[in-house]
Structures are given as structure tokens and as C-alpha cells.
Image (tube, protein in one colour):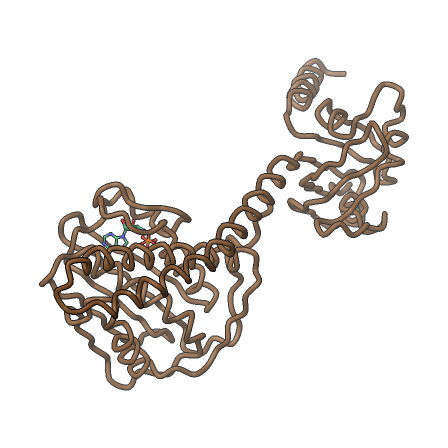
Length: 370
Ligand code: ADP
């Protein structure tokens, strides 16, 4: 063998042996030609398992919903048939010494000169710990969000009744108001958590209806008048706005969040502007405030889960409002953008396609890795 090729092969071998992820090379008939140490560890193979296929004989393969996958539908078999597999999560289980493992598999067919598949390279990443953590996180969020809601609602109801029953000027009014305000903040945080879990698990459907934008926004602002200083809002509408096909509750949640932030992060008497227009098949709804603004370096993270900016020091929520808003806008096939300058104010813009029959998938709804 030529010396250069030999050195190259040895180098490749060292790299594959050092890889943290499992790597297996299959021949066209499914025989294992090469298996790196990480894959041997993952499949609990020992020197007694020669050939390696022997050690894998008793390992059962399930999909992420714990349904058995027949041999011909398993990723490597499909790759041998010419399909490229990317980050498919499987559960592997077998009698000792094979522990139950969640594994993310990618498999690429390699074709020979005749165009037929003559090799498959597959990588196996152990995602067991990651999956366990995700399940624990979702369980915890579910418990926190649902079990906290009931006692809090009872508490809030009593506090509001007390608030209404106090005569004007009562010296306890301030205390009761504080209880109600903080109870409402807590309730809003729990509502965000519940909505986040629902959206991320994909357990939601948009109930779309034709919506007249001007009527919808005008009525929304009237409804918000009890909870937000809406007298600072200035609404404007381009004439002849087309109707939207959107879920009114979800659209309300998006717009209420933008309005509430704009009012929260700008001080009275500064006005907040909401303008609706139409361009390029989209209705654009813009919320502009002249408040504290957002540092430029934080803008790319604003729509991330639990993200709150460092600078303005007015933390009241969990940093989920804009994350949820972005998920909902994308589920409608639209997009959300922000422009801002520190100390000068912010502009949030929502674009919603006028005629969206098909919703785009919600990014982030799959919590599986890869
Ligand atoms: P929360 O649900 O906690 O209110 P959001 O996701 O709505 O959080 O907002 C995330 C962060 O973005 C907030 O912590 C706030 O600092 C910042 N932010 C949002 N809107 C504005 C705005 N109009 N002006 C300034 N900062 C804003």
C-alpha cells in the first residue's frame, strides 16, 4: 500500500476510535465492517461478541413512543435501501448486559460506481440522559403549572372580593391591592408556563376564523382597559385592510403581550403606537414605544425561552411572553421582528399572511435533540 494512503488510513482510524459518538460501517448485506469503541460501549459489546452482529442479536429496537420497529424499517436497513436518515431517536433494549438506551441515529448510504448502495455509515449518539432530563422537566412544569393554579385562583378570588368590599379610603386598601396585583402576576406566570408546555408538546390546534383587523384590535384595547393604561395607546389602521384567517384567542395573546410590554417599558405620559397595514400578502401590526429600549446585543435572544434583558431592571414575568408570541405567530405562518435602541424605544412588528390555510410547524415543538 502506498505510504501516504497508509498514513491517511491510520489517521482516520485514530479519529474514529477517539470519537465520543458511536460509528459503525456496514456492508451492502448489513454486515458490520467497522465499529468504533464508542459504539461497542453503547451496545455493550465485549470481545466475546465476534462478529459484532452476534452481540446485537438480542437487542430490540423501539421508536420514541416505545413501539417495536420491525427489522426492515430500522434506520440502517432503510439506509441500505438508499434512504438518508438524520437524527432519528430510537430506544434500544435487551437482556443484560444491554441497558435500555435512547439513541439518536443518523445513517448515510454510500453508493458504488454502479450507483448501488455498497456501504452505510451510521452514527449513534446516546441521548438517554438528555431525554430523562426533558421528561423530568416536562413533568415538573406540568405539576407546577396545574397544581399551583387551583389554590392561587381561590386566593385571588377572595382577595378581589375583599378589595371590592372595602369602603373608599380604608387604610387596608393598599395592602389588599398589593395582594391582588402580586396574585395576578403569579397567575400570569403560571398561564405562560402552561401555554409553553402545551405549545412545545404540540398539543394544540389553532381555531382559525376570519378576523377583521380593525374591529379586533379596537375591541381588544377596550377589553385591556381594565388591566393596562390603555389611555396611552394610539391606534391607526391603513384603509381597506384585508381579513386575517387566525385564531382570535392566540392573536389576542400575541398582541396583548406586545402592548403590555410597550406600556410596561415606557413611562407615562409617553404614548404607545399600534399601526396596522398591509403589504406583500401580509397584514403587518406594529407596536412602537419610546421607552427604555433594548441593548443591541440582546436583540437576537429576545424571542428565546425564559429570556429577560439585563438592562432595564423591571423584571416582572418569566421571560416567556415573547417566546410564546413568536411560537404562535409562526404557527400562523407569520413572523415577528424587533428593532430597538437603548434609551430611545422599541418597535415590534408582526407579519401575518392574509390567507394562511396551512400553518407552518412550530419550531421548538420537538424537544428531541438534534
Ligand atoms: P415577560 O413574559 O417576562 O414579560 P417577555 O418575553 O415579554 O418577558 O420579554 C422579554 C424581555 O424583553 C423582558 O424581560 C424585557 O426586558 C424585554 N422587553 C420586551 N418588550 C420590551 C419593550 N417594549 N421595551 C423594552 N424591553 C422590552
